[in-house]
Image (cartoon, rainbow, N blue to C red; front, side, top):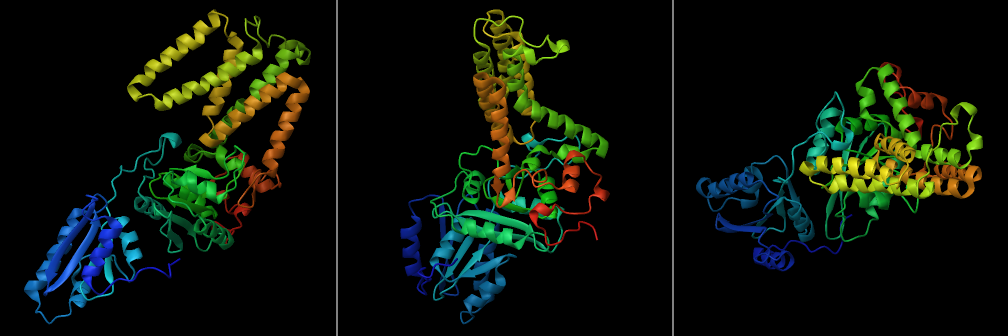
Length: 488
């Protein structure tokens, strides 16, 4: 939305220079570039931010501007000459100083002409960043190795490369009074629900904050009302193929500049338990991998509380399973052992993130030897506690969504505490509250447990089984697509 009180560009180039010096600190901030030329006896001023522009483009443009003196006479119209001679495919014009400053700070070149109340804005951006590479959290055995980067221009290009459809829309807005962060809303015009697109635009336009330096996570907290609910209400991906698949289904993508993670909306619980690897294998293999992953996620949530219940009340065990439970309880209560071991695994995960790669192997050996064997020998932990905590941790790591894995870990700790306090009643109450939380959770008016609740048999079948692509002919109804058929 344009500011009605925005300062207009002065016809006097000296006044424009004074205004920009006071606003941008030209001569104080070393990274704000300024160059003045005289063309056809008129002053031309160029403004740019060093480090965000491609220097070779600016040099080429300056050569063209200087050459006007050799090719044209003094009576030529300088404005028209610039309009025709600037060698670049993307040129816009601005009439306000605010727009010119915003564009310049985004990495564009701004050219002012003496005697004109408009300026030229040329896209010569060249953001510093890394090349597209496979995301660490979404690796596949076979498939594409490119991934999104921190450059929003590259990210839209990676998506456009996979969706060469004239109906793909990339709408960009700026958020943050000081940061002026670029946010791109991507969707298929004839597929995505326009009500959802409008809702997201409205929510983004209402963000009133200095800046969103934490990028996508800050935007997510404005888009969805998380509250105390630990479960993720949007899905993140750094893979262009995953993002494109969701666009085809009718989802909306939100890209935030400086972040390689795309926000996919709306999403349900079951969107967080699927992985690109399942679709890179045969349907039968993909189904097998998916079921193994489901078992790992279930183990990460319920295995420890269930084992603790059986230890506290061995009468619940069938005769053939009486071997379950520690032979030696150790010097510390079982509940304390479980909590210490579970939190210890979290310590190791944090240490692995913050430890330099060359030292991570040494850290793993120390953890295995000291925390594992020595802790058991001195009686700090029983061997069976370590076994079940390790299985739960492996299930946590097997969860594709990092956000979901942490939320499941928090739920597991609460279930362990309730089971210890109230045994069977505690586990039943805990699981009931857990299910009620998921049932009542909604993300952008989308039921979190769909297609289980509300029940949709066809959609649930596609979640339980990796269906062959030729048989997957309809889009998920939960996104309310305008066009329900994937194939004509």
